[in-house]
Image (cartoon, rainbow, N blue to C red; front, side, top):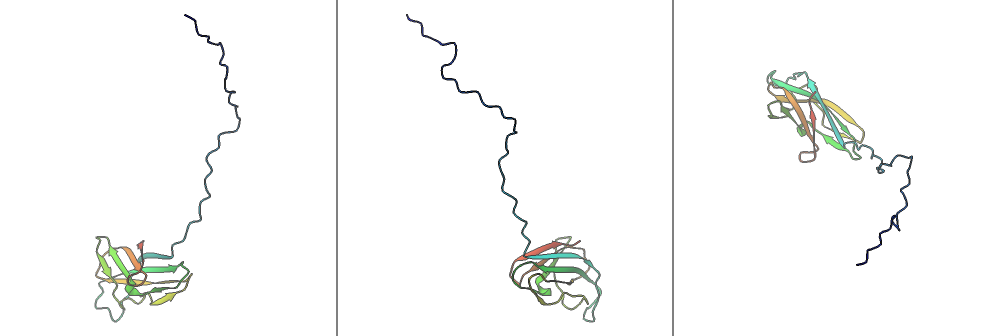
Amino acid sequence: MPVPFIPDKPTSAAPPAAASSAPAKAPESKPAAPEKKAAVVVAAKKAEFKKTILAQSNSYTSVSVTVTNNSSKPINVNPLYFAITDTNGTKHISELAVDENQIGTVELAPGENVTGAITGKGSWTPKSVTYTDGLIGDSVRADVS
């Protein structure tokens, strides 16, 4: 029985891999897109209730809100477009004309802002304020600081 021939060295060896002194490149990533500003920004902080002659008692809670229009279209701001949620999760609607600093009913052009009070009936701790663009538009929520 014939013995098969086995060469000492492989006849078709691949050339050795070239050693590189450069570190391996990480996959290129796309540059980060600039952060897009929210169309409407709402900021809220606790405020002192300043009673008007229309307030029926001193039992009201006010929050100072600032609405900024970063969109390219005008937006409307109205005290009725806000609700305040307290730390127990209860939502309070705005009481009109009871706080001297009530936020105005205005149209904000792009880049404009307005600040004023939103007031709810009773004494409680405010947690967040929700602004709805119009009565059924998009909502923006801000925590009360």
